[in-house]
Length: 366
View: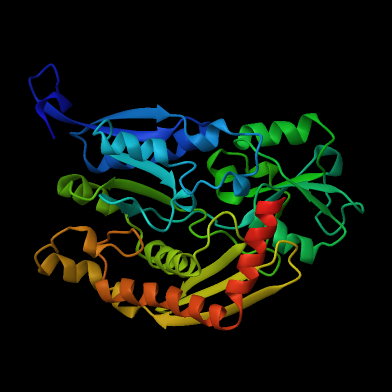
């Protein structure tokens, strides 16, 4: 870092200035502040500045995400600032990050995952109900093809309609109008905002599996900034990293994105990583779903082993679906990535490509 990015306190002590890029929404700021607070605890001598930005996804609020056709809706402006050295790291919701990052960037930290499931938030007049007990033809708001595809099949008596905007906006649309009986949101966002009391129902995997990376925060950095990469690497949560590598590898092999309904569920239990993945037609009538597992026993011993060996030289070839985690067992990460690819290949062999192609075409035609 250049000298102008240092600051001096009254005692003449020089403190490193680290600039963190984030979206301007209240949730994004809460998430970024939590990362900044953790870094400040770990590195008391650094001085943090938070730089808020507005992204394409924040500006286009009258079109469904799946229709905009832009892979980096919530990340491009932040990555541009990273590329221009205007910020040193960026905090994202991992589910917003494409599975292939632009050259020169890497995910330097994946933090411990919040509850990744989806939540039902009911209109106040329907308090005490659930999706099962809502009246026939009740309108449910969601901008996610993945959520709508799964829930249409599971709750055929309901009607699903697009709703856009940040959490505050969507809750306001629900509460102040009669357009929706309920909306579906990520439980993680509601919890981080302190709005757990609005959660009427958590959707279990048998009702609705979640999006790749949902509930996890990611710190994106320039791959060449070894010192910044080293600094943020302590934020990695090993189980979350392995789960999200498997999920991202699954999605990348399927060539999926927000314009097709792809869903996952992962778990690390007794040194085994379990990955369930599924693809759906837009109306949920056609689907493929399978589960596979792999051993990640090596991950537990990785941290100790990392202290005994010289640090792996950081370059982009160390990435696994965009994630650099040199302090975690490389073997465990490779197994997680292979699990995602193998599961995607299994679904592709059963016709997943055809289901996704039709879903993409129908979505484009809407």
